[in-house]
Image 1 (cartoon, rainbow over the protein chains, first blue to last red):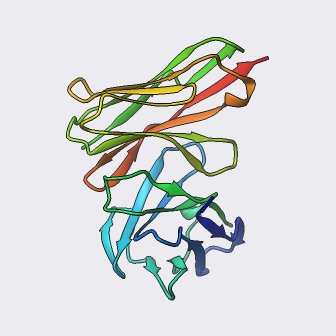
Image 2: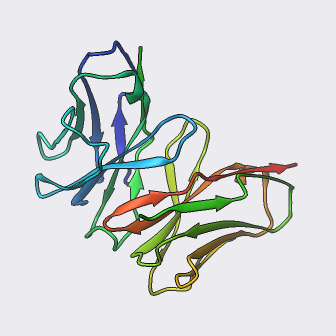
Length: 115
Length: 110
């Protein structure tokens, strides 16, 4: 069964360092997303991406965040200068069709710990 | 601003019981509502998707209903099993992004 894969599963980094989280969406999906979940809190939307550009982004997704589809399979989230409050589980998701028409398929998540 | 609330926050029931999890949302202008399951330290598994024009969806022992006008959805789990123990999250698709509830942590006692 096709699935969304994410790497790394866990990353520990020092405050101020750059981090890149990687995702391989399901191959025929066209819309990609990043969500995050701070420990003990609700899942929050970060950004959606379609046709090589950002479709929607939340207030959380400020200038220190960026997304990229560097090749035909990977979808990355970069955090330029990590802060303690960036510690969270980051989930990648993808959908086949337009947003709001179908279910999202999520990866297992990348746990980021900023020290 | 859309807000999603799930009640109860935690629920513990004996194996075999039928149970209902509740989800409410403040803005009825949604495209769809999804129920997810999350196991500790794991990802988010989609259980059921209900489009805004639908009233319910069923998958195996799970049945989800949607009453858009009252801003409510329920997830009914029949004949609960210990393997159903997990956190159940509802999320509404509002303005092309999912808005999430805090989840109901379900424990099924053998």
